[in-house]
Amino acid sequence: MRSIFTANRTGLVTGASAGIGLEMARSLASKLDSLILVARRVERLEQLAKELHARYPALNVVCEAADLSDPEAVERLLRQLKSRGTDVDVLVNNAGLGESELFERSPWYRVRQIVEVNVIAMLRLTHDVLPGMVARGHGAILNIGSGAGYAAMPNAAVYTASKHFVRAFTESLRAQLAGTGVTVSEAAPGPVESEFDRVAGIEGGATPAQRIFRITAQECAADIVQEFEKGTPVIFPGRNYRWMMKVQPLMPRRLFAAQVAQAARKLRQKLARG
Ligand SMILES: NC(=O)c1ccc[n+]([C@@H]2O[C@H](COP(=O)([O-])OP(=O)(O)OC[C@H]3O[C@@H](n4cnc5c(N)ncnc54)[C@H](OP(=O)(O)O)[C@@H]3O)[C@@H](O)[C@H]2O)c1
Image 1 (tube, protein in one colour):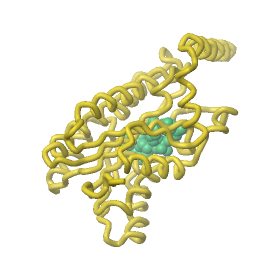
Image 2: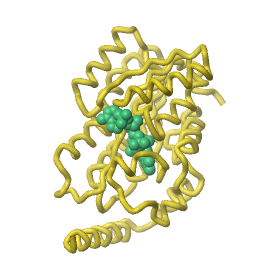
Image 3: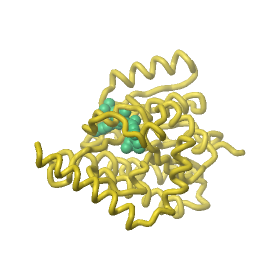
Image 4: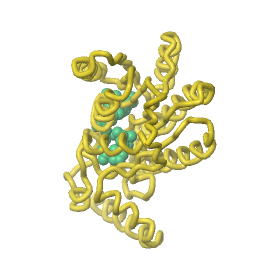
C-alpha cells in the first residue's frame, strides 16, 4: 500500500482544540514533518503542541487562533500561511458545530455560524490550498462530514444540510481531481464522544441507538487516519456504525422521512407543553 503521507509532509487540521480534530492531530503527528493546528481556543492548541513536541521532537507545530465563522479571520489565517511560505499538503477540514432546534426557532446567528464553519470555511481553505497541490502533483484533503449527511434530522435541518453539502462537494471534487495526484476523502462519523453535543445544545444523554454506535474520538481518528492514508473515498469510522451505514440505504426513503416527521411532531408537542 502506498501511503498518501510519503509525498505529503505538511498538514493543517482545523478544530484541533477538542474531540475528533485533537485526536486527528495526535494520529497524524507521527506521519508528518509539520502540523498547523487551527481553532479559537489557542491555549488548548498550545497545550497540544507541547505534548506533540515532547513525543516527536523533530515535528514542527504551529498554532493558529482563528474563528472560522468569521470570513475576515479565515483570510487572515490564509495570509499568515502565505507570509510563512507554507505549502499545505494535507488539509483536514474538521472544525464544525451542530444544533438541536427546530429551524424557525433557531437564532439567525447560529444558522449562519453553522454554514460559515461547516461549509464556507471548508470551501475557502480548500480553494486556497488546492491550486498549489495540483501544481505540485500531490496533496490530500479530508473533509469531516457526518452520518447526518446521509440522513434527515428532526431538529438539525441546517447542520444536516451542511453535511449533505460536505458529502456532495467532496464526491464531486474527488472526481474532478482524478489523475492530478491529489486525493480527496470524506469521513462521515456517527455518534462520537466529544464536546459536540454540549456545544450543539443536545440534551438527555445518549439514546439507545447512540450507545450501540458511539465510539471515542480516539477510536474515530484512528479509523479515519488508517483509511485516509490509503486514499479511501468515504470513511465510516466504527465497526457497528459502518455496518449500519451499509444497511441504511436499503431502507425505503419514505419510511425514513415518516420517522423523522414523527420525531419532529413529538418535539413540537413537547415544546407546546413547555
Ligand atoms: N461528535 C459527533 O458525534 C460527530 C458526529 C459526526 C460528525 N462530527 C463532526 O466532526 C467534526 C468535529 O466535531 P467534534 O465531535 O470533535 O466536536 P467538538 O469536540 O465540539 O470539537 C469541535 C472543534 O471545532 C472547532 N470549532 C468550532 N467552531 C469553530 C469556529 N468558529 N472557529 C474555529 N474552530 C471552531 C472547535 O474549536 P474551538 O471551539 O476552540 O474554536 C473544536 O476544536 C465536526 O465537523 C462535526 O460535525 C461529529
